[in-house]
Length: 224
Figure 1 (cartoon, rainbow, N blue to C red):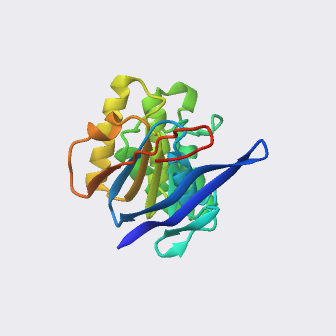
Figure 2 (figure 1 turned 60 degrees about the vertical axis):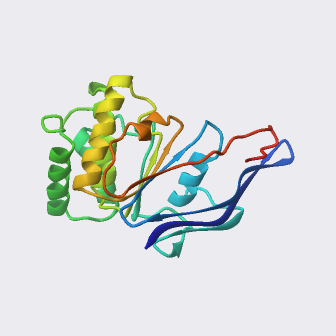
Protein backbone atom coordinates (compact mmCIF):
# COMPACT_ATOMS: atom_id res chain seq x y z
CA UNK A 1 0.00 0.00 0.00
CA UNK A 2 1.32 3.46 -0.91
CA UNK A 3 1.91 5.58 2.20
CA UNK A 4 3.31 8.60 0.33
CA UNK A 5 2.00 9.43 -3.13
CA UNK A 6 2.83 12.33 -5.45
CA UNK A 7 0.26 12.69 -8.21
CA UNK A 8 1.16 15.06 -11.06
CA UNK A 9 2.85 17.47 -8.67
CA UNK A 10 4.12 20.83 -9.86
CA UNK A 11 5.74 23.59 -7.80
CA UNK A 12 6.20 27.04 -9.25
CA UNK A 13 7.91 29.97 -7.53
CA UNK A 14 8.02 33.62 -8.50
CA UNK A 15 11.37 35.31 -9.03
CA UNK A 16 11.72 38.86 -10.21
CA UNK A 17 8.16 38.91 -11.45
CA UNK A 18 8.64 35.71 -13.46
CA UNK A 19 7.42 32.21 -12.76
CA UNK A 20 10.12 29.66 -11.99
CA UNK A 21 9.19 25.97 -12.34
CA UNK A 22 11.03 23.96 -9.68
CA UNK A 23 9.09 20.69 -10.14
CA UNK A 24 6.86 19.50 -12.95
CA UNK A 25 4.74 16.35 -13.44
CA UNK A 26 6.21 14.48 -10.47
CA UNK A 27 4.63 11.07 -9.89
CA UNK A 28 5.95 8.50 -7.41
CA UNK A 29 4.93 6.34 -4.47
CA UNK A 30 6.58 5.17 -1.27
CA UNK A 31 5.07 1.98 0.08
CA UNK A 32 4.59 0.96 3.70
CA UNK A 33 7.94 0.53 5.53
CA UNK A 34 9.85 1.24 2.36
CA UNK A 35 13.05 3.30 2.25
CA UNK A 36 13.14 5.55 -0.82
CA UNK A 37 15.98 7.96 -1.52
CA UNK A 38 15.75 10.95 -3.83
CA UNK A 39 19.24 11.76 -5.07
CA UNK A 40 20.11 14.78 -7.17
CA UNK A 41 22.25 17.91 -7.37
CA UNK A 42 21.61 20.95 -5.19
CA UNK A 43 18.69 23.03 -6.44
CA UNK A 44 16.89 20.29 -8.39
CA UNK A 45 13.80 20.21 -6.14
CA UNK A 46 14.57 17.35 -3.74
CA UNK A 47 13.97 19.31 -0.55
CA UNK A 48 10.85 20.89 -2.05
CA UNK A 49 9.43 17.36 -2.45
CA UNK A 50 10.24 16.55 1.16
CA UNK A 51 8.73 19.81 2.42
CA UNK A 52 5.51 19.14 0.50
CA UNK A 53 5.28 15.65 2.03
CA UNK A 54 5.81 17.27 5.44
CA UNK A 55 3.10 19.88 4.77
CA UNK A 56 5.60 22.75 5.03
CA UNK A 57 4.99 23.73 1.40
CA UNK A 58 2.12 23.11 -0.99
CA UNK A 59 2.08 22.17 -4.68
CA UNK A 60 0.87 24.68 -7.22
CA UNK A 61 -0.42 21.76 -9.27
CA UNK A 62 -1.26 18.12 -8.54
CA UNK A 63 -1.64 16.51 -5.13
CA UNK A 64 0.46 14.97 -2.35
CA UNK A 65 -1.05 12.22 -0.20
CA UNK A 66 0.13 10.56 3.00
CA UNK A 67 -1.75 7.46 4.07
CA UNK A 68 -4.52 8.29 1.53
CA UNK A 69 -5.15 11.77 2.99
CA UNK A 70 -4.15 14.82 1.00
CA UNK A 71 -1.42 16.75 2.78
CA UNK A 72 -2.64 20.17 3.86
CA UNK A 73 -0.41 20.89 6.87
CA UNK A 74 2.22 19.27 9.13
CA UNK A 75 1.04 16.44 11.34
CA UNK A 76 2.30 14.03 14.04
CA UNK A 77 2.18 11.15 11.55
CA UNK A 78 5.25 12.70 9.84
CA UNK A 79 8.54 13.50 11.54
CA UNK A 80 11.37 15.44 9.89
CA UNK A 81 15.12 15.13 10.46
CA UNK A 82 16.95 18.16 9.06
CA UNK A 83 20.57 18.59 8.02
CA UNK A 84 21.21 21.29 10.63
CA UNK A 85 20.05 19.10 13.57
CA UNK A 86 17.56 21.86 14.63
CA UNK A 87 18.01 21.15 18.34
CA UNK A 88 17.04 23.71 20.97
CA UNK A 89 20.44 24.90 22.31
CA UNK A 90 19.00 25.82 25.72
CA UNK A 91 17.45 22.37 26.27
CA UNK A 92 19.19 19.19 27.39
CA UNK A 93 19.22 15.96 25.40
CA UNK A 94 16.29 14.70 27.48
CA UNK A 95 14.30 17.91 27.03
CA UNK A 96 14.94 18.05 23.29
CA UNK A 97 13.63 14.51 22.85
CA UNK A 98 10.68 15.24 25.14
CA UNK A 99 9.58 18.42 23.36
CA UNK A 100 7.33 16.82 20.73
CA UNK A 101 5.75 14.48 23.26
CA UNK A 102 4.75 17.43 25.45
CA UNK A 103 3.26 19.17 22.42
CA UNK A 104 1.16 16.07 21.73
CA UNK A 105 -0.12 15.99 25.31
CA UNK A 106 1.49 12.65 26.19
CA UNK A 107 1.37 12.05 29.97
CA UNK A 108 4.56 12.20 32.05
CA UNK A 109 4.87 8.46 32.70
CA UNK A 110 4.54 7.57 29.01
CA UNK A 111 6.97 10.35 28.06
CA UNK A 112 9.55 8.94 30.46
CA UNK A 113 9.12 5.41 29.12
CA UNK A 114 9.49 6.49 25.50
CA UNK A 115 12.46 8.78 26.13
CA UNK A 116 14.37 6.14 28.08
CA UNK A 117 13.69 3.62 25.30
CA UNK A 118 14.97 5.92 22.56
CA UNK A 119 17.98 7.14 24.53
CA UNK A 120 19.03 3.50 24.80
CA UNK A 121 18.14 2.85 21.16
CA UNK A 122 20.38 5.70 19.94
CA UNK A 123 23.24 5.06 22.35
CA UNK A 124 22.74 8.32 24.25
CA UNK A 125 22.92 6.87 27.75
CA UNK A 126 24.87 9.12 30.10
CA UNK A 127 24.18 12.23 28.00
CA UNK A 128 20.62 12.88 29.16
CA UNK A 129 21.52 16.19 30.85
CA UNK A 130 24.06 17.35 28.26
CA UNK A 131 23.37 20.38 26.06
CA UNK A 132 23.81 20.34 22.26
CA UNK A 133 27.03 22.41 22.39
CA UNK A 134 28.56 19.69 24.58
CA UNK A 135 27.96 17.01 21.95
CA UNK A 136 29.73 16.08 18.73
CA UNK A 137 27.93 16.50 15.41
CA UNK A 138 27.18 12.78 15.26
CA UNK A 139 25.75 12.80 18.78
CA UNK A 140 23.59 15.81 17.96
CA UNK A 141 22.20 14.00 14.93
CA UNK A 142 21.45 10.97 17.13
CA UNK A 143 19.39 13.27 19.36
CA UNK A 144 17.57 14.68 16.32
CA UNK A 145 16.75 11.15 15.10
CA UNK A 146 15.64 10.08 18.59
CA UNK A 147 13.39 13.15 18.78
CA UNK A 148 11.76 12.08 15.51
CA UNK A 149 11.44 8.37 16.35
CA UNK A 150 10.06 8.95 19.86
CA UNK A 151 6.88 10.39 18.31
CA UNK A 152 6.23 6.98 16.70
CA UNK A 153 5.56 8.58 13.29
CA UNK A 154 4.20 6.61 10.39
CA UNK A 155 6.53 8.49 8.02
CA UNK A 156 10.10 9.66 8.58
CA UNK A 157 11.35 12.45 6.29
CA UNK A 158 15.12 12.95 6.24
CA UNK A 159 16.56 16.03 4.52
CA UNK A 160 20.34 15.73 3.94
CA UNK A 161 20.71 14.24 7.46
CA UNK A 162 24.44 13.55 7.04
CA UNK A 163 25.31 16.78 5.22
CA UNK A 164 26.85 18.53 8.24
CA UNK A 165 28.93 15.54 9.36
CA UNK A 166 32.58 14.70 8.72
CA UNK A 167 33.36 11.66 6.56
CA UNK A 168 34.06 9.25 9.44
CA UNK A 169 30.95 10.24 11.42
CA UNK A 170 28.95 10.02 8.20
CA UNK A 171 29.86 6.33 7.84
CA UNK A 172 28.91 5.66 11.46
CA UNK A 173 25.53 7.33 11.00
CA UNK A 174 24.92 5.39 7.78
CA UNK A 175 25.41 2.20 9.79
CA UNK A 176 23.07 3.50 12.48
CA UNK A 177 20.41 4.25 9.88
CA UNK A 178 20.64 0.69 8.54
CA UNK A 179 20.34 -0.70 12.08
CA UNK A 180 17.28 1.44 12.78
CA UNK A 181 15.66 0.47 9.48
CA UNK A 182 16.06 -3.20 10.38
CA UNK A 183 15.03 -3.07 14.04
CA UNK A 184 12.45 -0.24 13.98
CA UNK A 185 11.26 0.03 10.37
CA UNK A 186 9.45 3.14 9.19
CA UNK A 187 8.32 4.48 5.85
CA UNK A 188 11.29 6.72 4.97
CA UNK A 189 11.77 9.40 2.33
CA UNK A 190 15.49 10.22 2.32
CA UNK A 191 16.79 13.33 0.54
CA UNK A 192 20.46 13.75 -0.41
CA UNK A 193 22.74 15.23 -3.05
CA UNK A 194 25.49 12.72 -2.17
CA UNK A 195 24.89 9.45 -3.97
CA UNK A 196 27.34 7.71 -1.62
CA UNK A 197 24.87 8.31 1.22
CA UNK A 198 22.62 5.65 -0.27
CA UNK A 199 24.94 3.61 -2.48
CA UNK A 200 27.18 2.84 0.51
CA UNK A 201 24.23 1.56 2.54
CA UNK A 202 24.18 -2.26 2.56
CA UNK A 203 21.15 -3.88 0.97
CA UNK A 204 18.37 -4.82 3.38
CA UNK A 205 14.69 -5.67 3.26
CA UNK A 206 12.46 -2.79 2.13
CA UNK A 207 15.36 -0.75 0.74
CA UNK A 208 14.59 0.70 -2.67
CA UNK A 209 16.65 3.57 -3.98
CA UNK A 210 15.41 5.80 -6.74
CA UNK A 211 17.95 8.06 -8.35
CA UNK A 212 16.21 11.05 -9.86
CA UNK A 213 17.96 12.87 -12.66
CA UNK A 214 16.40 16.25 -12.06
CA UNK A 215 19.04 18.46 -13.58
CA UNK A 216 18.43 22.15 -13.96
CA UNK A 217 19.56 23.04 -17.47
CA UNK A 218 18.66 26.70 -17.48
CA UNK A 219 18.09 29.39 -14.91
CA UNK A 220 14.50 29.47 -16.14
CA UNK A 221 14.14 26.13 -14.37
CA UNK A 222 13.60 23.67 -17.22
CA UNK A 223 13.93 20.14 -15.83
CA UNK A 224 14.77 16.94 -17.67
